[in-house]
Image 1: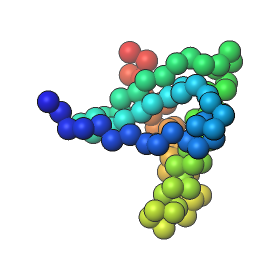
Image 2: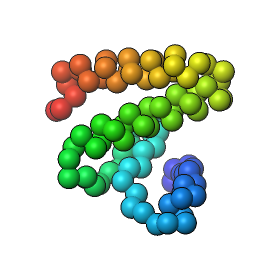
Image 3: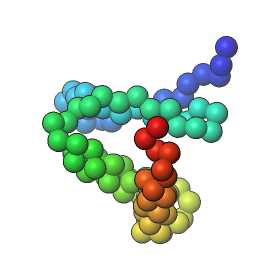
Image 4: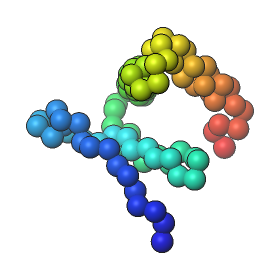
Length: 91
């Protein structure tokens, strides 16, 4: 049996107003494990969602590590770019 799964709390506005979970991600043995539903008619909406996630992650790095938010965002962007250039990404 594996260790227990540690999950985040549901966002307060989703608890109050309802909603549909569109993305769940976890780190398992150092790798990312993701579950998602298509959710949007236009794939560009995923781009906006991912950009918002990157900004929130940069803010978290700023609050928790003292790293400047713009530096954290730039490092996230650089990681995105490096991963998107990986020719094995769509195997």
